[in-house]
Image 1 (cartoon, rainbow, N blue to C red):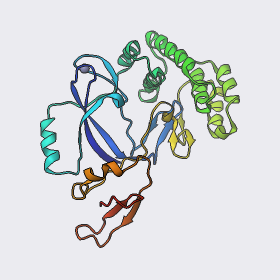
Image 2 (image 1 turned 30 degrees about the vertical axis):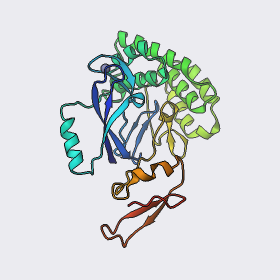
Image 3 (image 1 turned 30 degrees about the horizontal axis):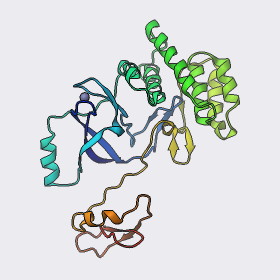
Image 4 (image 1 turned 120 degrees about the horizontal axis):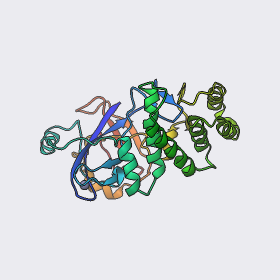
Length: 283
Ligand SMILES: [Zn+2]
């Protein structure tokens, strides 16, 4: 798990600033995947997507907020100056269950994500504290959230059918859960077997799956609500190659060629980056 740059982002309502650490690379080796889509892995850390501003109390999507500074961890003096400059600013935190509920009054876009987060947070009571019963008040909120989430799911998407079946199982409606599982494509037979087994045992709690629920080879269940970066790669040496002069020649999505440069005079492990017209060369 490689740390990426530290971002300083700004609340779109009051411009108060907050820090956010992102990962440059991660993987799901040795991951534990749960039937509600939660993934726990040594080399993976989920990032918050929604923030509540501490100052003005508004909610906002982090990817829509302005990044005012990007501090690279490997850089030297300039990074230290910036770290000192933003020393007093705190780190962003995941909203609590109550804050997610509160956010539904303000945020109308992608409530599916918010309700998925609420569902998984409630499931943590069974997952982490291993309690068997929620308080009446919590159970009412759990059920209400589950039904609302069911209504937001896309009936045509296989992965959302799995989530729907899981929600019904968690609600104790085993017949409905079974009915939905039977309509899911055979591509997900391994997961279906697990879930049907729990239905037969009349177990309504979230369970561990051996492998993450996958949409395809490298996209996991979270991608139904998130845009995910599979890899964000820092390029060193851009200062010396005057990258500002060649930015205008770069095209988003263009294929780059990486070449080892073992005879590089500063670094035997240097890798050069070229675009199609060879106008970029950096290590
Ligand atoms: Zn604010």
